[in-house]
Image (cartoon, rainbow, N blue to C red; front, side, top):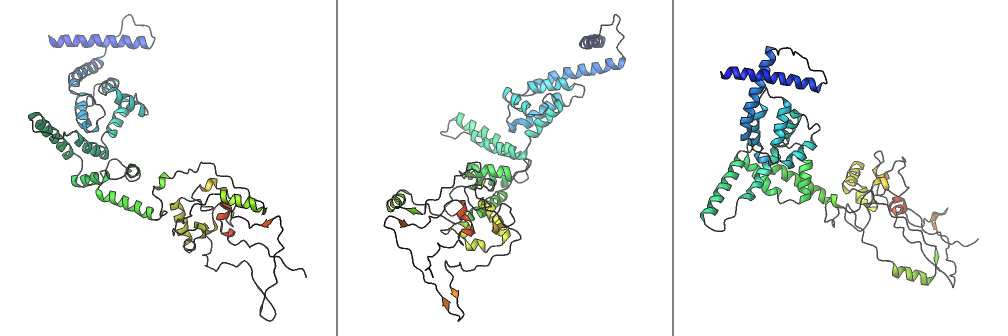
Length: 415
C-alpha cells in the first residue's frame, strides 16, 4: 500500500514539474500531456528520496561562524548530509550551504569568490580557506586564552578549567603536524617579534599557508634581518620600511646661489640666522662625510657598491637617502648617459686612490726648479669685503666632480 502511494506521488510530482517547465519556457500547456517515461520517474523518485534524507540529516549540521578550528567537524557533517548525495541538484545544495553559514561569514565569503552562485566553486573555496595548516595551527594555539585563570578552588572553577584545558590539549594534538614541539617553540618565539616583523615573516617566508614553520626557520629569518640592519646607519633606530620620506614627495627646490659680494652686516646677519647643519653620517663607514666621498666605499667592487646602494635604499644617481632615483633633481649623469652614478657603472675601471689635487700646481722651469708666479690680492674696497662662495647643499654637491673644482682664480701681476 505504501509503495503504491509513493509511486502515485512521484507521478504527480513529475506532472507538476513538467507544467512548471512549460510555464517558465512560455510554451502553451498541452491538453493531453504525454506520459512520463519510466526512466524519468525513476530519477524523480531518487531525487525525492535523496532530498528527504538530506532534510533529516541537515538538522545535525551546525552553523559555521568562521572559526577555522571548528571547520573540520562542520565539513564532516555537511558532507554526510548534503555534499555526498549524488541525486540532489547543485541548486538545492547551494541553498542548504548558505543556510548553514552565519550571516557575517556568508556575506564576506560569497563576495570574495569569483562566481558565488556556483556551488562547486563556492564549497571548494570554503574548504581551501579553512584547511590551511598554518592558519589552523595558529588559531588553535590562540584558543589557550579561553582557558580560565584559577582564582579559587571552587567546584565550578575547577570543572571549567579542566574542560577547557582538555579541549585545547585535544585540539593541539589533532593538528596536522608530525612535530608538535617544533611548532610550540615557533609560537613562543613568534610572539616576541614586533608587529612589523611578524607581518613580514608571514608575507615573505610563508609562501604557502599549507605548511607549519619551525623555530629554526624563524631564527634564520631574524638572522637575515640582523645582517641587513648591520649595514644600515649606526644611528638608525627604525626599520628600513619605516622611513618617513617618500619617493613620491616633491623634492626641495635648490636654493639660489648668493651674490659673490655682500656687505659685512649682511654676512654677519646670515651667519647668525642660519641654523647649524645636521651632522652627516656615511651609510657605509659611519664617518662624518657623505657616501660619495667615502674612499672605503669607493674601494669596493662595482657589484658590491651596487648591492649596498640597494640595501641603503639610496638614490642611484646622487647617493642621497632622501629621494628615489626616479625623482632625483640632479641633472648629472654617468658617462654612458644613464641615470646612475659613475661608481655604479658595471663596465667602469676600478678606481685608484690617488691623492687629491691641490688648488695650485707649480710650473716647472727649464732648469728643473719649480717656478712660483708672484701673487697678490687686490686692494680691499672700503665698502665691500670679499666673500668665498658658500658650499652648495643641493644634489649637485653630492657628485665627485664637486671635489675636483679649482679654487678661486689668483690675481696675477700685469707684465
